[in-house]
Image (cartoon, rainbow, N blue to C red):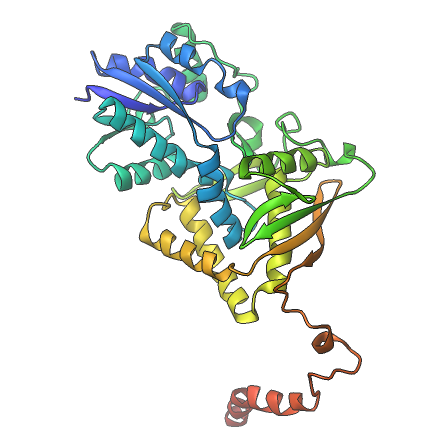
Length: 399
């Protein structure tokens, strides 16, 4: 039986009720709450220690994970152009390995013999947390209350909290489940779940309605060095401040809203609403710059592997040799991805306008429709005859 448990703690509905549940389930155990600051904002972090103590926690620690979250996870995903199922910029998925690592480190500090999370048995996050535990601390017991207790719904959880006088910000009428960090905020649950219904207008929090966004477009220029964003409109910024700056600019133009029906790792389809304002701008800028500097075959291989990298992040396989090897490829591929890209923001859209780089592979002499000194058009005939040779041979045989 677990004697000391390190709980991944957010202060939300699920983790708030887990503390008393653990103490009831494992009499005499100590529960040590650990929260990771990944940029969810002061409102969510304020008073966590006091709330955890009132719920029965032996301690509560808030680890500042913002910079490692950006430098170790977000930037590699951005370099890769990792997008899950065509649209999802992986905001929740990205943060989980950093949070799990902080939890394991605190578990070691307090001498815990078990780790616990508040993820449901239907979601992706249970896999992400537990694969991280297995990679970083295979000796620790894993406790997953949602797979054990009698609570079957968020309504049941609210009743459980009410019976134990645990304060909550959610209600049965507005019961959205949210996850916020520096990169994005997700909204799930309630009427959002119905694919036949339009997006829930009352769910959005970060971005203005594109219809209400300014009528004047705004441009923003991102500077990159070796595939890493380093400046906004000429001002050098540290990684956290850079994303915060872009979030503010893009959010007022309604940029970064999506509603998607995605395939969860465990098998079912689920619907969510996501806001990723600054991240949407960065992906657009990075794509424009990569198109300018990456050699054709390298770019095509890059885009093929991006799909796999996105799957690994979504599936919780961050601490794996495959993910590490792919990251090494993307860092090598983007060694010359330095320069600037300008993106226009208007009524919910982020559109790259231009890109410049000292390593640009574009040649006006080669690309022009006018006279070219470095390209002989007559050479194309022989190239096409050789390139089409297999097709001509196959066609002759079929005839």
